[in-house]
Amino acid sequence: MDSFSGIHPFLLVLAAAGLDRWIGDPRWCLHPVVVMGWWITQLRSFAERWFSHSPLGLRLAGCCITLLLVLGSGGCGWWLEQRSHDLPWVLGWPLLLVALASALAGRSLEQAVQAVLEALKNETELGPARQALSWIVGRDTQDLSRQEILRAAAETASENAVDGLFAPLFWMLIGAALWPYGGPGPLALAWGFKAASTLDSMLGYRRGTLRWLGTAGARLDDLLVWLPCRLVTVSLPLAQPSTARRALPLARRALLEGKPDPSPNAGVSQAIYAQCLGIQLGGVNRYGDQSTCKPLLAAGAQAPEPADVERLLALSRRLEGLWLLVALLVGAAVHR
Image (cartoon, rainbow, N blue to C red; front, side, top):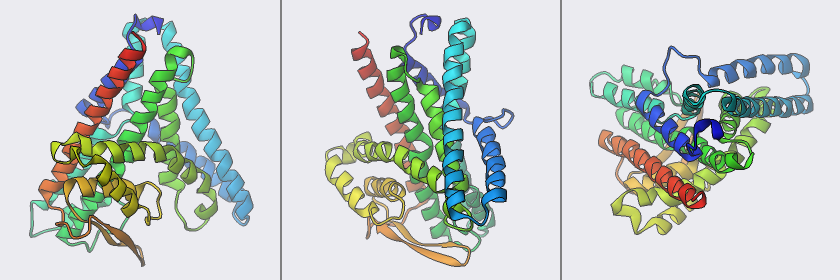
């Protein structure tokens, strides 16, 4: 960290979070996730060409793809961290800052959800809202009612707040703690996590060859999100005065309600937001010709309205600030 003239790595993470909230993901700039996605597509094509009729071969290929992507992405981040020492701080610090901000999806998620809410203002034509929603959810959207659109927007905002914001932020902060001692820093761990997350989003489906090829990436993503998801479950009620005193009971209820969900993390993350906001989530989702019944979360509460989805986004912003504040205080105490 000498090349940064004493700038603390936790401050670097704080600045990256601020940059993400300020500009999000610029469309004119090549995003690291796009590069990861390109490699996944190429490696998937190779694996399916060689092992299309062998479930065992596909599983082994999926493990190799996962190792290559995660270790390669994390290694690139670590290399950039090391090379930053050789650059003047006016070059090294901004380079790491932009790279770190690319691993956070706070503003981009918020913009995508708000686009759905904006389209819903035209209550006589739901087509634009369904189209905007289709960019951020996996379920079928063409026949959704206004209330189903709002539920889907709230569910994806709560689930992706953990996957796209708090999980990478957690691994950044772990890296910030390790970096001064020669370990992998915030960028190495953040890009390693993003590789696992991208693998899960592209290959983590239980259909066709992906039933075997995508297993390793999906399991690794579940593992890496597990602890950040539980930390969100415990800390989210603390981000608003109305639920701060009931943090532990709400967390226990969310863990119980989210447990029946096939995902070890998605149901829990949705459940804690539902409990904190007092809105009912869950129900029947349609995927192609199949319908999936998800457990009801905060059953009996009111259905989400646009104002509730906006409150959900604001709650994520407050929790992000709370995490960063606690991390800075802990970092300052350790490095006094």
